[in-house]
Length: 341
Image (cartoon, rainbow, N blue to C red; front, side, top):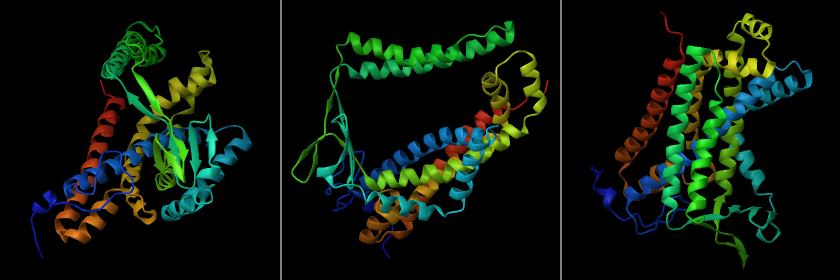
C-alpha cells in the first residue's frame, strides 16, 4: 500500500456533477478535497439556519393554548423523529423525480424554474465597485452589534429601551443599499433560459441538494423544537405572571422574558443538533450528492488508493467543524448563564 500525501498534487481526472467553486477534471486531488468541503458546508449551513428557525416555531407551537396548533406540532414531531434520516433523504429524492421535465418546468416570474433536474435561479453578476457594497454589509453588521451592546447596557443602567433590533436591521440593509445606489447599481443578473433539452445560464441547484436539504431540515427541526419546548418549560411560570402584571403583552413576554431565560437550557442540546446536521450530511452519498465523503472518500480513494490519508483527512474535517461549532455555542452559552455576584 502506497503512503504519503504526495497524491494530493496529482491530477484527479474525473468530473464532479456540481460544485460551488470552480473545478475541472484536470485539477488535483487537493482541489477535489476543497470542492467536497465547500459542498458539505453549503448544505450544512442552510440546513442549520432553517433547522434553528423552524425549530423555534414548532417548539413554541407545541406549547400553544390552541388545541389544533399544539396537536399539529405534536404530530409533526412524532412522525418525523420516528423515521430514520436515511429514509427521509431517499423519500424526498424519489419524490423529486416526479417533478415535470424541463420543458414543463414549474416557473415563477419567468426567472425561477423547478423540474426533475433541479432548481434554476438567476445568477448575480457583480460589476465594478460591488466589493464596496460587500464592505458596507460587513460594516453594517459590526455597527448593529455595537448598537445592540450599547442599548443593552443603557437599558440596564436607565431602564429605558432602545429599538436596537430595527436600528440594526436599518444599518445592515440601509448602508449597503445607499452604497449600491450611489455606485449606480453595480449588479446585474444572468437569467436561466430553456435552450434545447435543458436550461442554460443562471445558477442551478441539483435536485439531490434540494432533497438532502429538505430531509436534514425536516428531521433535525424535531430535536430543535423539543429543546425549545423543554427550555421554555424550564422557566418558572411566575416569570410569565410577573410580566403580565407589569402590563407586558404575551408576545413581549415570550420574546423579552421567557425566551432569553430559556436559552440557557436550549443551547446545550442545540450544540449537539448543529453538529449532527453537519455529520449526518455525509448520508448524501446515498443519493449521489457530491459532498466530501462522495467525491473524496469514495471516488478519490478508489482511484489513488491512499485510504489511510483520505479517511484521516475526512475525519479531521468533521472533527474540526464539530469542535468549532461547540466552541462558538459554548462561548455564547457562557455569556447567557446567570453570573453569581
